[in-house]
Structure formats: structure tokens, C-alpha cells
Length: 117
Length: 113
Image 1 (spheres, each protein chain N blue to C red):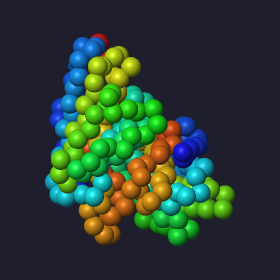
Image 2: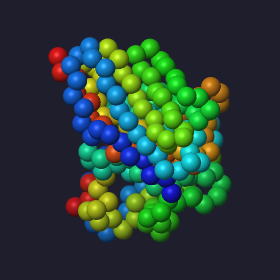
Image 3: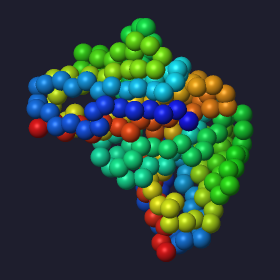
Image 4: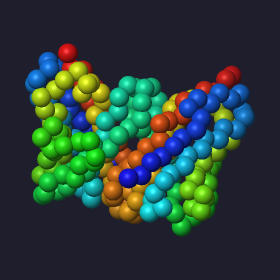
């Protein structure tokens, strides 16, 4: 399986500020995604990070709030902009497409725990 | 969009017994169904997956079944052990997962010694 790392692992931020989360995969992958998981709850897909083009956002998530970059096949960033306490959550990146037989398998990073005061 | 329902939300079984978790999905275009195990404070880990051209898949004590007609799939864990205690999530996706995953709400599996 792919090794995925995220930075920072956790942060406490003031409302109105922005935080950029980095996701690094140890090998080239086809797809990268960003999810949000509120404590004790399930995972919700935020967007697909497309290499070299704008991310594809799910309903309820917009680029102005969650700008995403993916400059190459191993790296992506998610920015949480103009934060409010409702943005407090765990943000996880995932990757898939390392080649058969694991092509469909989606592997997750360790997550970034964000607290907004 | 896709909607995935998962039941039960909590399941308590005696060690050594079997556990079954059930999920239903709404989008007939979904063709990839993974199951993840998440221990407290850790990342979700893929434990088994199934594609829509397969009705059943087994890996040691874990099996998954898929009924495309009824749009439901289930996780079966046999001979449960204390280390099986965790939250389990089912998910569904079209395009083999390339459209991202829609997750169920999760099942907290408790193995009683």
C-alpha cells in the first residue's frame, strides 16, 4: 500500500484565519481526494484533487472556502479559508491508482485534526 | 448523488461469534464497494473490497457479499477476536472508485471477552 503523510498532524487556529494542509504520497498515484471527518462521525468527500487543473468539488463544498492544489502526481494541498468553529474537524487525504492489483484501492493519510476557536 | 445506509450503528458480539454489518446504496451506477476499519485516533484501513461483477469475496475470517439487484452489500466477520473491535465503514463508488467514495455512517463493533 502507498505511504501517505500529512502536515500538520494537528493545529489550533483562530476564527477568520486560514490553514493549509499538505499531503505527500511516496509514489505516483492517479487520483487524490480530500475528506472531512467530524469526531465520532463518518467521512465526507470534499473534492477530487486533479493534477494540473481545478479540483472537482462535491455538493456543499466550494473552491473559495476549500482551495485545493495538486501540482504533481504525489502532492496536494487543501486550504481551509476564513475558518469558523464549524470547520473544526479531521481532514484526511487519500490516494488511489498505484497499479494493479491495488488500482482501485484508496489509501488514507493519518489526518489533520483542526480546532478553530 | 449516491446515498449509503449502514446498519447497525453499534454491534456487540461475544468473542468467537460472527458479526454481520449491512449496507444499502442508492445509485445503480456504483460498481466498487470497499470496507474500512478505523481504530480510535487512527486512519481508516481498507480491509476488503468487492467489485460489481463479483457476488462474494473472502479473505480469511472476513467476507463481503454483494446483491446488485437489491443494492445491498454486507460484511461478515467470523470467529471474532478482541482486536476486531473498531468502527467499520462501508462505502460505494462509481467509476471503480475514481469518483471518490460515499461512506455509510459506520458501525461500532464491540467484541465482548
